[in-house]
Image (cartoon, rainbow, N blue to C red; front, top):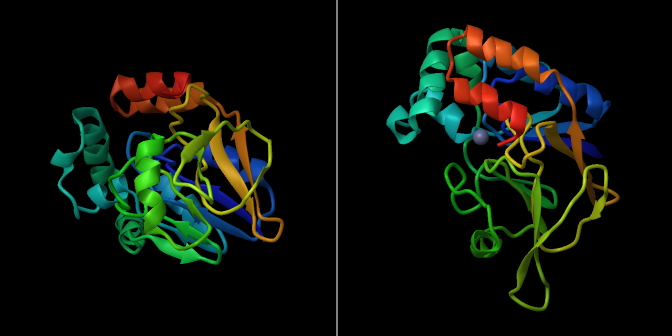
Amino acid sequence: MRILVMSDIHANYTALQAVLKDAGAVDETWCLGDLVGYGPDPNAVVEEIQEIKNLTCLMGNHDVGVVGRMSLETFNGEAKRSLMHHEKVLTASNMDFIRSLPSKTKTRGEATITHGSPRDPLWEYILNTLTARLNFDHFDTPWCFVGHSHIQSVFVKEETSDRVTVEQTKPDEMISLRPKLILNPGSVGQPRDRDPRAAYAIYDTEARTWTPKRVEYNIAEVQQRIREAGLPEKHAVRIGEGW
Ligand code: ZN
């Protein structure tokens, strides 16, 4: 099976469309959460996601916040402002869809999938080898896919030792999967690894490969919608620079 793995769309409809088009035909789509927050298009994103066939979609912390299961006070000021806006504009049926999503870690064949980390699905960021190392004991499958950090990355635990390293990856460079790995497809709508292109990955379950991907989209158009909606200027600036 050829599976599109994506995360952290953050109400960026233009980036989502670019990813779906670039990925082409896939057997399944796995979305690791954060449909909303930051961006200008929460309804368009949630509606597009619902159209995807063979979809597994998890809740991210922003999704949990927007449906009121977590206080918006736990978010920083600018993130909170966007969520308050989304809370207002999201239609009742789109809210219901978000509410229906699972927020727990799931297992799919050889992969564990979660938003933040396997030991703390909603809040923990796996940004370094130390945090990755603590998480390798929290899943039983050979590999685990996470989102949340918005950074396309691969953490490797060596089989014979406890050593955890970060593997440098390049878009379109296929990685052979082997035990034990933690992989992040990056963020569709708000990449933070200084590459502003939308990020995702293709997981091939038979070949056991993972291919990180990047695709350009019309960033200026999204920045304009962020400004028109009166959302924080910071959210417009950062998608142009990838931080
Ligand atoms: Zn996020």
